[in-house]
Image (cartoon, rainbow, N blue to C red; front, top):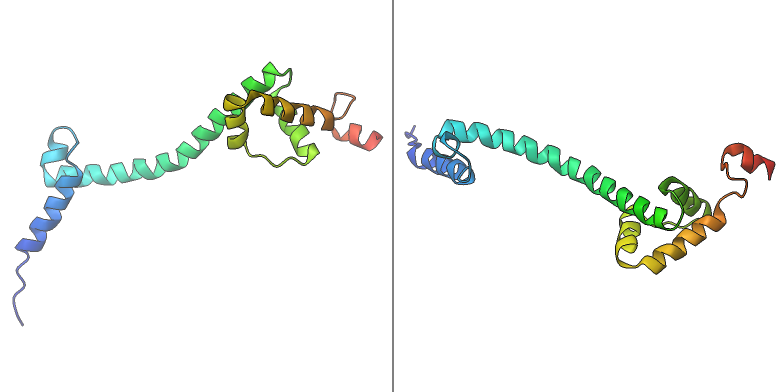
Length: 131
């Protein structure tokens, strides 16, 4: 059986790892083993933070919607309740964009939500059964 010389493949693998770790501090960018360990941790952080970013954006959208809703004398939760009752299916990303860039359109949606809310002010199940 022919002998397999691994020098070329090993050097290629190590060079790729060190190139990926080129921006890291100290030994993590210069020593193969440290660079490999750091790349494993970096991949973990990258995966975790891709998930976290979605929640962060949702939180930002809710904050913007709440601020704009309060300018129109309504809270975020009442706005969302009214939009759901009115059958308006606009997601939070679009609502936040409207709140920032098109205030009159957002105010119109607030009025639609306000009209769909129960009149007694509670909005609970008892108010729906009493009607």
